[in-house]
Length: 391
Image (cartoon, rainbow, N blue to C red; front, side):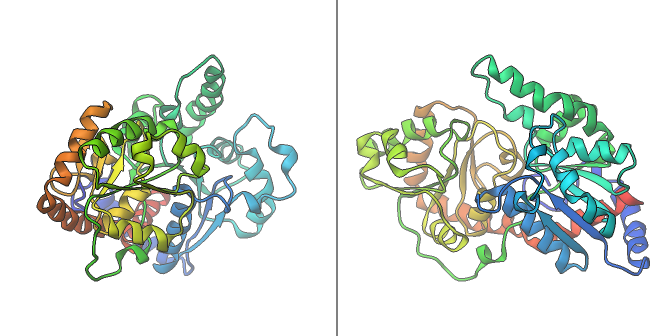
């Protein structure tokens, strides 16, 4: 995917145009649905893009005739003693091995943090399935270096990944920066890289016109440094000073309201609604009533909240990195900001709020771009790639 146009196929995937049709036919000729496992050691109780991606990917595969099962932390019962093992993902392999022997999935799609153990198990011939590493964002690139302990964190991530990922059958990346990182830093063969976006639930595409609240700004994400909350807080102070009637919503912070408010200037706090958790219906209402989504993240994979917002016609102003570069066409369906300076973010926000016609045009373009993220459309592209990996 490049700049929201589905006709632009990355170079590393052009070979699928030749091979995927035959491979898909081979799958169909087997007389059974292809069985895919989707595995990550994260809890169902914790909201977030990873869990939503897994569930929507499984839903899409089921819709187009395959069989997909999602495994999360709650499915790994009875193996807590293995959580201290150094080989990342050993818990998931051990907990699912008995079921694996019964079901023999064709493909195991496994999150990067669990992937080294699954790749190792395949190399040792304990399992025969194709192993696809699901990268929500290259884990090494996500690290924030703040002290000596981060060296150990880096080593715990980097060494298993660098040894195992080049041996995986495929790497699913959600942005081009990560794809190039795996190729250049990890030595993954370019032909094994697939780049596909997350899917967006159907509920975010509900038709109809929506009354947006003038000057309502929206931030959706956990309240952590990597998400650029310091930039956001500083910029909003300047915005409120220039536009006292602005409305601000901070949603999905997963932090206590008091903590979030303590990091905001008093002038901002009194104009801000804070929602620590929000379900899909609540998020859709927020997207449809806001004129601008703010994403000052220092690093991301591809924010599923951004894709959801675009489906609801809420254009993003985002930091120029990660998957935002792949989706946003500046000045068309959103805007990119290369700086993390609070003044520049504030200036961009103020300028955009002063131009409702520009915001309205971007709203329409964002909704059009988001058609590419519909569940079945993404699932069919990924299924073609899976077929190519097994051919």
